[in-house]
Length: 120
Image (cartoon, rainbow, N blue to C red; front, side):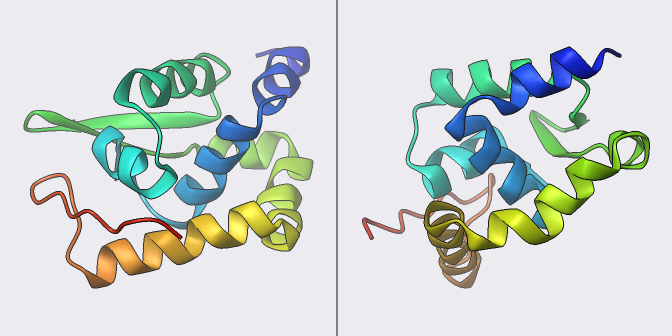
C-alpha cells in the first residue's frame, strides 16, 4: 500500500463523507445512498476507490455488502485515525451527514428496509 494512493483517495469530498459515516457505523451502499443523498452508481464508484486504497473493507451478508473503515489502515497511518476521530467532527457537512445517519436509524432505516428521510 502506497501512501500516495491513500492521499489520492482522500482527495474527494464524497469519499471523505463516506469515510466519516463508515467510521461511525458499518453500512451498505443503499444506506449510504439515502444518508448522503447520492446515486447508487456514485456511491459504488467512490466505495471502489476507497477499497482499492484499502481504507475500507466489505463483508458480504446475503445479497448486501456491508462496509466499514479498515482498522489496519488506521494502525498503519495514525493521521487517518486523528482525521476521522477529531477533525471531521468540525466539518459542517460531516456533522449534517451524521445527523442524517442518526435520523435514518431512528426511522428504522436499513438495507432490508429502506426509509426515506427527506431533505435537510
